[in-house]
Length: 396
Ligand SMILES: Nc1nc2c(ncn2[C@@H]2O[C@H](COP(=O)(O)OP(=O)(O)OP(=O)(O)O)[C@@H](O)[C@H]2O)c(=O)[nH]1
Ligand SMILES: [Mg+2]
Ligand SMILES: [Mg+2]
Ligand SMILES: [Zn+2]
Image (cartoon, rainbow, N blue to C red; front, side):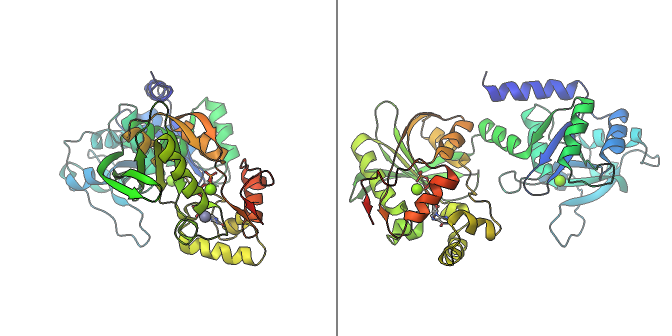
């Protein structure tokens, strides 16, 4: 059994043992929620959520499921996906026992809104596509499904003694005190990518190029809905693979500010000769987009380096995720690669998504007086393995 399936099996047993998970959103909200399967929740778990969570007690279901059963959205001016809060049964609705009954009733797919009272005391949230929104709602529902429960979760934000919901230290102390498991939404995303086939081959055509004749392949992509594509040359054994992030300035305009264009040409030559795959990821500007990259260049013209400029603009130094690349490789029937890169983070990222990198093959681009400081920053701040002085491609 893969490690991931083992994790999910353990998690199922953990929930069945009557313990909630602490799910941490480290990127967007920087908050932690208790999460528990709606079909299992009972009075004592609701009481625990209310006593130790203290945030908004919510029941999450896929948006389409709620709409199809007649539940309706509350108006919102900022995109929150709250639905009308509900009660099941004819009591006051607020007791721990009654809120547990309401959650379990909603988890019974046959029950329509007409069997509930509203507005009630259990806030309903519609979860959306996990590929489009990576919040507590989406990740908790997907986690329920991956653990073999129905797609209904109960969540509540965890507030510390002062009522602050952004206290990671408090979360780890609470986890220790009650021996609770914690996971990040990023962990859930990785399990989701490993458990679901989100990218499939769509079309394949012949593409004669100056470097030789390749097959160009497009994909149906339900992972991030971007138009990544691949160039393939039939290979023997473990394929030579280049995972190339889009760089319009380098790849199309032969910019000398970076080494992307020369890397692309070199990679195509090597793949044409050895056989293998070039995956072209639509991740312009280390995934900040072209116009933001030009703003980053503007800051670099004023003296910031490529790392500092991203951060100054409010981005991470490198926004990229390689989940799509891993699924494209699997769609092409590849799970072992010889990877053309100087970037150790790409190797680590691919391996975290289940691709084994049997060899890293350096791919030096041109070193020019226009890109030497950019390359030095990549070595010093991103850990890239480029021997600038040693590179044969130097024309300073
Ligand atoms: N934000 C930002 N992105 C840049 C800058 N210069 C180049 N890029 C982007 O960096 C990415 C480089 O992609 P790759 O060459 O595939 O990856 P890498 O990190 O250089 O690692 P290698 O595999 O060793 O080439 C592209 O998306 C470029 O658009 C810059 O100054 N700022
Ligand atoms: Mg949240
Ligand atoms: Mg590069
Ligand atoms: Zn570039």
